[in-house]
Amino acid sequence: MTDRAAASVDALERRKRHLPHWEAPGEAYFITFCLARPPAVDLTEARFASLVVAALCHFDGSRYILYDYVVMPDHVHCILQPTVADGRTEPLSRIMQSLKGWLARQINAAAGRSGKLWQTETYDHLLRNVADYEEKSAYILDNPFRSGLVQQGAEWAWCGRGSGVV
Image (spheres, rainbow, N blue to C red):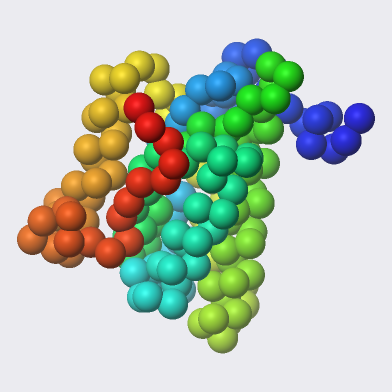
């Protein structure tokens, strides 16, 4: 048995650090991960934002299906669904640890800095139905507009959709 197979979710599970984390095989999640305080970089600088988008898209179709995403100055929102193999999925915490770890190394190198980049814990919300997805998708795609970064959400370069189709 490989490490990846040994660490998998095959039924509804609840994990808790500071926030509760519900996981179920084949389900999609609304996820937010934030820079540590005070923010060390502005994620919307092209050199950082392009790294975030590339990292999110890299495992789209293999480890997870990526639906929607947005890169904001100090946080990232996305909707993703871990892929199912033999009725099991890789734990979301492991996917996020890998993603945030790689991004921390790349962004720190690009910024000429070292040290902690992300807050330790990630917010995740298990999507319950299509209406829940549509609400979170709209939130993601409208976030740059609501934050005053653009006049219309469609203008934001660091916002988009992966291969996932609802």
